[in-house]
Length: 280
Ligand SMILES: *[C@@H]1O[C@H](CO)[C@@H](O)[C@H](O)[C@H]1NC(C)=O
Image (cartoon, helix red, strand yellow):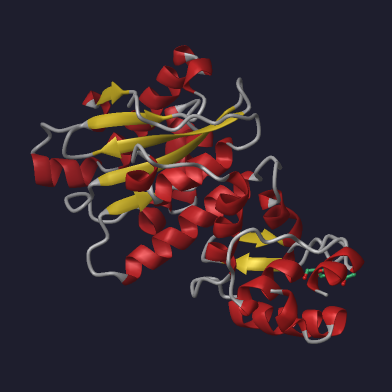
């Protein structure tokens, strides 16, 4: 019975992991490409995602960089609700401007990157900076470890990394951070501390992607679960990871569309499948 229904509705989005009926309905609704692609399905503070952008989380699909920025926005909002946020998660647009430190600084000032994404420098442990490498068409991640004064490069396709491009960008990024935090550094470290003195490291235990399309999804995973991915037993299941990112964004209470979306998904499933409890 269930199988014949699935065949009947052949464009049903296959959900490979156990999912609650509510989540299953959400997934069917947002991933139905016959619906309005411009509909906003995730709205955080500074970034939002349309259906078309979120659909870049479909299996084997190249990730839209707005998904990365919206994830940084969502994680930052969640962390800000906690008492002691220790990590900062920057939108990918920050590193996009590091071809020139002046451009990077003015971008940060215009978009209030420091106020929105970076909190107290003294409390900060790690800064996650997603990067898009235009030469390789590849997403990777800088992890700044403030206590150790180290920048780790988390690259799921390390064999292809061209140090020249990355080194220049990284230098500009660190110089820009020194400028943005000049007052804090002067006050708290009496000027003897600076981002640009950070040492670069390439950890050898970063999982490597077996395909050409998952780099953006790896970057999100590196940001939200760095301990999990470096566990020797970790296995990256692409379809599941994509689904998890979608649900994390859609069902999050920092998604201001989430209530609205849940009722639209309910009505959509009711109309499309009748009582769809059996399908999930
Ligand atoms: C699609 O969604 C956008 C954004 O919500 C809206 O402005 C537009 O009118 C919708 N188009 C249709 C055909 O419903």
